[in-house]
Length: 331
Image (cartoon, rainbow, N blue to C red; front, top):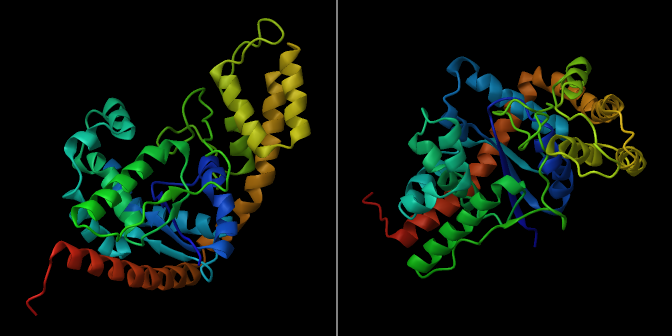
């Protein structure tokens, strides 16, 4: 029996290398091996109050990038989160099982409060509950997540277990991280610290053209070079090597590590090579994005088909949840 796999990406702009290497490149394999649900998390994006004028265009952009990266609507269920109202209803019900204290302790919430003290909305606090509803509505077994999302996935397991224990059932599975037997990938940003992300503005996007990619990479933060041969790498330089190890072949990585250990590295050469190897991966995807983005009929058909399949699964789960909780209809 195939595993049920679910993954979603917020509709707040273009997808970046972190999205691609964290999950997207493996989605093609998952489509053939599992029953997969991939969605665009437009409800999640509301926590940052996106411009209504660009809101739908952002959804279309992410959809085109999904498809250009290799997702096949004939193999997978691809849909927009807000088009499946059962998700929002389950989110409401699961909020009754979530406690304020545990939500306030999540690392992502505390980080958002620190970075955006003037936008501490309830959606940020209950973000893990909505994420749990996304996963549990399809009773997913596996979720491809980066290391930064591990805590949210653990909370999903807590909510599933709490529901099962409270109502003395074995209804929800406890989903596990899907990482193909390897360490979960976290692609760092180009600003010297932290992960690559849309809100941080430190990423290489799949839709970037060659000139933009090279400009971003050449501006990446480094340091003045190793003080002595074999000196430990600073965090910004270590981050560049993490990206290099992800996009380049082993001989290239070995060459620049040897240069660093010998105290002879030239960061300009490292960045040029890094930009070359990033372009080899992303520019073909960019061409497909531009082609698909303008095909309104294909985008519309993909979403309609995906939403129908997603709602079929979601409705069955929600009906089961409401029956277990004691909801009965008068008509």
